[in-house]
Image (cartoon, rainbow, N blue to C red; front, top):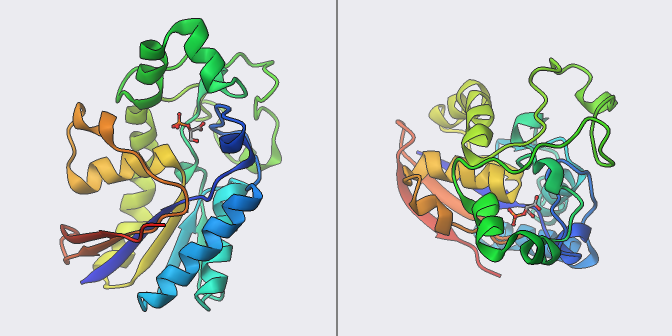
Length: 230
Ligand SMILES: O=C(O)[C@@H](CO)OP(=O)(O)O
Protein backbone atom coordinates (compact mmCIF):
# COMPACT_ATOMS: atom_id res chain seq x y z
CA UNK A 1 0.00 0.00 0.00
CA UNK A 2 1.20 3.51 -0.82
CA UNK A 3 0.14 7.01 0.12
CA UNK A 4 -0.52 9.58 -2.58
CA UNK A 5 -1.01 13.24 -1.72
CA UNK A 6 -2.35 15.74 -4.23
CA UNK A 7 -2.03 19.40 -3.36
CA UNK A 8 -3.21 22.35 -5.40
CA UNK A 9 -0.88 25.33 -5.02
CA UNK A 10 -1.74 27.98 -2.45
CA UNK A 11 -3.62 31.10 -3.55
CA UNK A 12 -1.76 32.82 -6.40
CA UNK A 13 -1.60 36.52 -7.18
CA UNK A 14 -3.97 35.94 -10.07
CA UNK A 15 -6.39 33.82 -8.00
CA UNK A 16 -6.54 36.87 -5.76
CA UNK A 17 -7.23 39.18 -8.73
CA UNK A 18 -9.75 36.69 -10.18
CA UNK A 19 -7.88 36.34 -13.50
CA UNK A 20 -7.80 33.27 -15.76
CA UNK A 21 -4.26 31.97 -15.28
CA UNK A 22 -3.51 28.66 -17.04
CA UNK A 23 0.13 28.56 -18.15
CA UNK A 24 0.94 32.13 -17.06
CA UNK A 25 3.68 31.87 -14.45
CA UNK A 26 2.36 33.96 -11.58
CA UNK A 27 3.64 33.83 -8.02
CA UNK A 28 1.91 32.85 -4.78
CA UNK A 29 0.15 35.62 -2.88
CA UNK A 30 1.05 36.16 0.79
CA UNK A 31 -2.00 34.10 1.72
CA UNK A 32 -0.87 31.41 -0.72
CA UNK A 33 2.50 31.13 1.02
CA UNK A 34 0.72 30.74 4.36
CA UNK A 35 -1.63 28.10 2.92
CA UNK A 36 1.35 26.12 1.62
CA UNK A 37 3.14 26.28 4.97
CA UNK A 38 -0.01 25.30 6.83
CA UNK A 39 -0.45 22.35 4.49
CA UNK A 40 3.08 21.27 5.37
CA UNK A 41 2.28 21.43 9.07
CA UNK A 42 -0.81 19.30 8.47
CA UNK A 43 1.24 16.72 6.55
CA UNK A 44 3.66 16.59 9.45
CA UNK A 45 0.87 16.24 12.03
CA UNK A 46 -0.48 13.30 10.01
CA UNK A 47 2.98 11.71 10.05
CA UNK A 48 3.09 11.63 6.25
CA UNK A 49 6.54 10.82 4.91
CA UNK A 50 7.27 10.93 1.19
CA UNK A 51 9.78 9.15 -1.01
CA UNK A 52 9.24 11.23 -4.14
CA UNK A 53 7.72 14.58 -5.12
CA UNK A 54 6.36 15.74 -8.46
CA UNK A 55 5.37 19.19 -9.58
CA UNK A 56 4.78 21.30 -12.67
CA UNK A 57 7.18 23.80 -14.22
CA UNK A 58 5.14 26.70 -12.81
CA UNK A 59 6.41 28.76 -9.87
CA UNK A 60 3.22 28.65 -7.79
CA UNK A 61 3.19 24.84 -7.66
CA UNK A 62 6.96 24.47 -7.16
CA UNK A 63 6.97 26.95 -4.28
CA UNK A 64 3.92 25.31 -2.69
CA UNK A 65 5.73 21.98 -2.79
CA UNK A 66 8.84 23.48 -1.24
CA UNK A 67 7.03 25.32 1.55
CA UNK A 68 5.00 22.22 2.39
CA UNK A 69 8.04 19.96 2.38
CA UNK A 70 10.08 22.41 4.41
CA UNK A 71 7.39 22.66 7.08
CA UNK A 72 7.22 18.88 7.26
CA UNK A 73 11.04 18.52 7.44
CA UNK A 74 11.41 16.73 4.12
CA UNK A 75 12.66 19.34 1.70
CA UNK A 76 15.46 16.90 0.86
CA UNK A 77 13.36 14.28 -0.97
CA UNK A 78 13.83 13.74 -4.73
CA UNK A 79 11.56 15.83 -6.93
CA UNK A 80 10.75 15.85 -10.60
CA UNK A 81 9.14 18.68 -12.56
CA UNK A 82 7.12 18.26 -15.70
CA UNK A 83 5.09 20.54 -17.97
CA UNK A 84 2.60 17.65 -18.05
CA UNK A 85 1.48 18.65 -14.56
CA UNK A 86 0.96 22.31 -15.58
CA UNK A 87 -2.42 23.97 -15.17
CA UNK A 88 -4.66 23.44 -18.18
CA UNK A 89 -3.94 26.03 -20.86
CA UNK A 90 -6.78 28.55 -20.75
CA UNK A 91 -6.29 29.77 -24.31
CA UNK A 92 -7.30 33.33 -25.05
CA UNK A 93 -8.99 33.64 -21.65
CA UNK A 94 -5.57 33.81 -19.94
CA UNK A 95 -5.14 37.23 -18.35
CA UNK A 96 -8.86 38.07 -18.51
CA UNK A 97 -10.94 38.75 -15.43
CA UNK A 98 -13.38 35.90 -14.67
CA UNK A 99 -16.22 38.19 -13.56
CA UNK A 100 -15.79 40.45 -16.62
CA UNK A 101 -15.78 37.36 -18.86
CA UNK A 102 -19.06 36.21 -17.27
CA UNK A 103 -20.58 39.61 -18.01
CA UNK A 104 -19.36 39.49 -21.60
CA UNK A 105 -20.25 35.88 -22.51
CA UNK A 106 -22.75 35.00 -19.74
CA UNK A 107 -22.34 32.93 -16.58
CA UNK A 108 -23.33 29.69 -18.26
CA UNK A 109 -20.79 29.91 -21.08
CA UNK A 110 -18.01 30.81 -18.68
CA UNK A 111 -18.97 27.95 -16.34
CA UNK A 112 -18.84 25.56 -19.30
CA UNK A 113 -15.38 26.81 -20.26
CA UNK A 114 -14.22 26.49 -16.65
CA UNK A 115 -15.66 23.17 -15.59
CA UNK A 116 -16.90 21.09 -18.54
CA UNK A 117 -14.93 18.04 -19.58
CA UNK A 118 -14.62 18.57 -23.30
CA UNK A 119 -15.50 22.13 -24.33
CA UNK A 120 -12.44 24.11 -25.44
CA UNK A 121 -11.96 27.75 -24.47
CA UNK A 122 -11.12 30.15 -27.34
CA UNK A 123 -7.59 29.52 -28.68
CA UNK A 124 -4.73 31.83 -27.77
CA UNK A 125 -3.31 33.69 -30.80
CA UNK A 126 0.46 33.33 -31.31
CA UNK A 127 1.15 36.98 -30.59
CA UNK A 128 -0.97 37.08 -27.40
CA UNK A 129 0.45 38.95 -24.42
CA UNK A 130 0.72 35.83 -22.29
CA UNK A 131 1.93 33.41 -24.97
CA UNK A 132 4.79 31.12 -23.88
CA UNK A 133 6.24 31.05 -27.39
CA UNK A 134 10.03 31.15 -27.26
CA UNK A 135 10.24 30.49 -23.49
CA UNK A 136 13.37 28.53 -22.55
CA UNK A 137 11.31 26.46 -20.11
CA UNK A 138 9.48 24.81 -23.02
CA UNK A 139 12.41 24.73 -25.47
CA UNK A 140 12.62 20.90 -25.45
CA UNK A 141 8.95 20.50 -26.29
CA UNK A 142 7.89 19.68 -29.82
CA UNK A 143 6.10 22.90 -30.89
CA UNK A 144 3.20 20.71 -32.04
CA UNK A 145 2.77 19.55 -28.43
CA UNK A 146 2.55 23.07 -26.99
CA UNK A 147 -1.16 23.82 -26.57
CA UNK A 148 -2.93 27.07 -27.39
CA UNK A 149 -6.06 26.03 -25.44
CA UNK A 150 -6.99 22.93 -23.43
CA UNK A 151 -10.15 21.46 -21.99
CA UNK A 152 -10.06 18.95 -19.12
CA UNK A 153 -10.04 16.00 -21.54
CA UNK A 154 -6.92 17.23 -23.33
CA UNK A 155 -5.34 18.06 -19.99
CA UNK A 156 -5.95 14.50 -18.79
CA UNK A 157 -4.49 13.11 -22.02
CA UNK A 158 -1.20 14.93 -21.43
CA UNK A 159 -1.10 14.25 -17.65
CA UNK A 160 -1.67 10.50 -18.06
CA UNK A 161 1.61 9.56 -19.85
CA UNK A 162 3.54 11.17 -16.99
CA UNK A 163 1.38 9.36 -14.44
CA UNK A 164 1.85 6.04 -16.20
CA UNK A 165 5.58 6.37 -16.93
CA UNK A 166 6.83 8.08 -13.77
CA UNK A 167 4.36 8.25 -10.91
CA UNK A 168 2.44 4.96 -11.04
CA UNK A 169 5.59 2.75 -11.03
CA UNK A 170 6.78 4.46 -7.82
CA UNK A 171 3.42 3.93 -6.14
CA UNK A 172 3.36 0.29 -7.23
CA UNK A 173 6.70 -0.16 -5.47
CA UNK A 174 4.98 1.09 -2.31
CA UNK A 175 6.68 4.51 -2.36
CA UNK A 176 4.78 7.47 -0.91
CA UNK A 177 4.31 10.29 -3.40
CA UNK A 178 3.29 13.96 -3.21
CA UNK A 179 2.15 15.86 -6.31
CA UNK A 180 1.93 19.66 -6.10
CA UNK A 181 0.07 20.96 -9.11
CA UNK A 182 -2.99 22.93 -10.20
CA UNK A 183 -6.78 23.02 -9.94
CA UNK A 184 -7.41 21.47 -13.32
CA UNK A 185 -4.40 19.20 -13.79
CA UNK A 186 -5.39 17.70 -10.41
CA UNK A 187 -9.10 17.55 -11.33
CA UNK A 188 -8.03 15.56 -14.38
CA UNK A 189 -5.95 13.17 -12.31
CA UNK A 190 -8.71 12.85 -9.71
CA UNK A 191 -11.19 11.97 -12.45
CA UNK A 192 -8.91 9.17 -13.55
CA UNK A 193 -8.07 7.92 -10.05
CA UNK A 194 -11.64 7.95 -8.76
CA UNK A 195 -13.28 6.99 -12.04
CA UNK A 196 -15.51 10.08 -12.06
CA UNK A 197 -17.86 10.43 -15.04
CA UNK A 198 -17.59 13.22 -17.64
CA UNK A 199 -20.78 14.74 -16.17
CA UNK A 200 -19.90 14.50 -12.48
CA UNK A 201 -16.46 16.03 -12.93
CA UNK A 202 -18.21 19.39 -13.43
CA UNK A 203 -18.88 19.47 -9.69
CA UNK A 204 -15.39 18.68 -8.47
CA UNK A 205 -13.47 21.64 -7.04
CA UNK A 206 -9.95 21.59 -5.61
CA UNK A 207 -9.29 24.07 -2.82
CA UNK A 208 -5.95 25.89 -2.76
CA UNK A 209 -3.38 24.49 -0.35
CA UNK A 210 -5.49 21.57 0.90
CA UNK A 211 -3.72 18.21 0.76
CA UNK A 212 -5.84 15.29 -0.46
CA UNK A 213 -4.47 12.05 0.97
CA UNK A 214 -5.17 8.75 -0.80
CA UNK A 215 -4.37 5.21 0.29
CA UNK A 216 -3.77 3.09 -2.80
CA UNK A 217 -3.52 -0.68 -3.06
CA UNK A 218 -0.91 -2.35 -5.26
CA UNK A 219 -3.24 -2.08 -8.30
CA UNK A 220 -3.54 1.63 -7.49
CA UNK A 221 -7.19 1.39 -6.52
CA UNK A 222 -8.23 4.02 -3.98
CA UNK A 223 -8.94 2.36 -0.61
CA UNK A 224 -9.24 5.58 1.38
CA UNK A 225 -9.42 9.34 0.77
CA UNK A 226 -8.98 12.07 3.35
CA UNK A 227 -8.86 15.83 2.76
CA UNK A 228 -6.73 17.79 5.24
CA UNK A 229 -9.07 20.76 5.32
CA UNK A 230 -8.00 24.30 6.21
O1 LIG B 1 -7.36 30.39 -13.81
C1 LIG B 1 -7.00 29.20 -13.79
O2 LIG B 1 -6.01 28.78 -14.39
C2 LIG B 1 -7.81 28.20 -13.00
C3 LIG B 1 -7.26 27.90 -11.66
O3 LIG B 1 -7.03 29.03 -10.88
O4 LIG B 1 -9.10 28.72 -12.84
P1 LIG B 1 -10.47 27.90 -12.80
O5 LIG B 1 -11.02 28.07 -11.42
O6 LIG B 1 -11.33 28.54 -13.82
O7 LIG B 1 -10.18 26.47 -13.10
